[in-house]
Image (tube, rainbow, N blue to C red):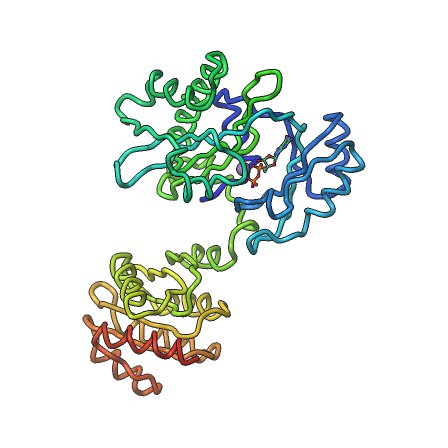
Length: 378
Ligand code: GDP
Ligand code: MN
């Protein structure tokens, strides 16, 4: 689950990380009032679950309250990476001497949280990672001991020559790790961590992604979810009990089981296609789940073919077949459907599908190749 910058800033602040004040506005008038209270120059920042807001025009300086209202009216309602801006954060503008990057991710390769820093922080950190990866420094954290002071100071000295500044940055890294651990984050980033001309170190941006599996035991974090800021397809999928991730390709995949879903996506890619989504309809799939899945899939205009790949175990093939038939009775499918199913109640499923005019395959390779070809021909 993604948090907004303002929510992430609150969490960092509670963990002792220096963050400028600020408040959230949903209208230009509110933005003006906040800027008036803060006094002086402010920054107006789009609150959406996307990076690169600065480049997209979603982060603007404003010299006074009127300018803040004008910037807010520009930013509210704009779309950044497909997401509409409903809120802006108004915060005092800091003077910047340098911008660094500090982040912690849970890293699969080292099976540990990894702290990463770069003195080349700011809006182009992805570029730095791609072209000059040697400018990013990392250390793996042993969760039994936590981030050790010498590890933090070692990395902080990569960012600041001044020992006082390096100590402040190391303290921030320690607090960041504590925050990460306390909220069950899978990723946390401060970009930029800035040094001001008078030598203070401040976090000017904050990104926090919470591991969804941590939400059940952290209701106060789960309550921070803002469904209005999420992709509508992902909200619908969550409500229907489906695991769904939208991707950029044209072959929609409807699969039972995460492992089979991954294998199906690999095979789509192998045969020259691109998956439009990851979708796991789960174990005991009732027909309603299949209907919900098809509703979500068909709403995506990039989808050119739909591939069902069902390995019936606990999931009954006839349930899936009934779901497909019910869905097509409720709304028309404008794209070709390729169905592969095998396992529990397979014969019954084939009978249901054939009666409704849908051919069913049992071979996975054949089905994937067909779906890729149909998507390409569309
Ligand atoms: P992002 O583009 O979504 O990562 O948004 P950021 O919050 O990181 O802002 C983008 C850029 O705007 C930063 O890298 C800074 O260069 C600039 N910026 C953000 N806040 C301030 C501020 O308080 N003062 C100044 N001068 N620049 C800022
Ligand atoms: Mn940033």
